[in-house]
Length: 156
Image 1 (cartoon, one colour):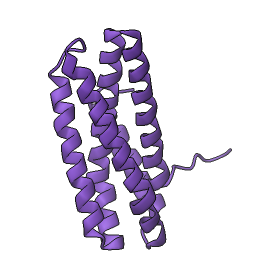
Image 2: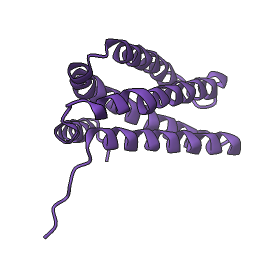
Image 3: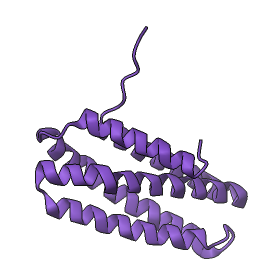
């Protein structure tokens, strides 16, 4: 009998990043096809996934990374980027997909997230890998919190 090994913290967060990127690509295809219903469903899905991702990063990963690396600057910048994304997500949530600002706000959100992901994966994650941070234990905590949040919000 084999045991399922939970991804370490960085693997889990990177998998979330790939999921968001794929959803933003799907959104662009739906936009190009003029499919407002699909745009709405995809935007709702990506916004929910991002909110959960940001929550687990802010409550579990960032504090552990701050303790392990002492890099306040990168983590403070990441928090500010999250704050900007949350503001856009709230604005997107108030719009209908046929609103001309809907596509623009989703596009800007995707660009902000792309920038944020680049910084995390090229700067913060390598720094945490070099530290004494227990990436496996943090990965388990992230996975548990993510699962709990998805259940709370009725997300499969």
